Image (cartoon, rainbow over all chains, first blue to last red; front, side):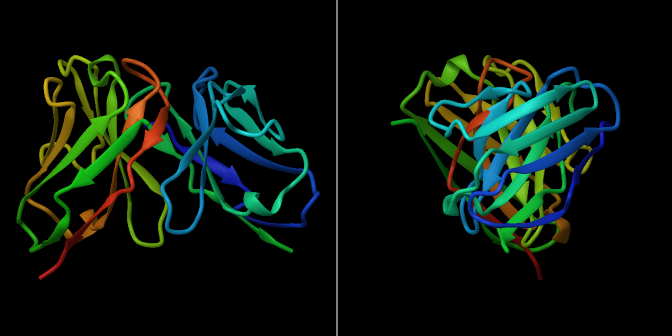
Length: 107
Length: 120
């Protein structure tokens, strides 16, 4: 099975900051990677698919990049609504696996 | 409006069974793969099982293989998860999700989730 790791596990940031979350796969997954945002008590929301494709309706301050085994999610200017937990997921091969999550909170 | 509505969760004893249902609306259900994802209390997301658009191919996490069965009824736009021999570690919110495509894809729509608690 493909293992996914994320760093950092927690991130303290301020409104307006540029932040980057890194996701690594234990083997190459080409660009078959998605990013999700989850707020407390809510279902996750798809942000990015195929490593860099922005899901419809997602603000353009979110962007994704990478291929192979290393990927990043960048938020160009943090907004109050962005404080949440972020998960990456590989869908290159079953069983699909999620990263452990990165919790972003207000500094 | 695209919507997924799960039902069937609840409290069950270890070794017991439950069947989750997910009623889909607002899209052509038969054109998309579907997936169950779960989240134990206070924990991260865990992919559980997926089924292709036609229902002819299914995939399972090792943790549920042999105990859970995913199925779908395209005539009723409904996804199912039959869960047998339940264990305490199956306690979680179970989310029904719609894939972006017919197979091997990210999920773009999530239901609100249904809670399954396995406890004596």
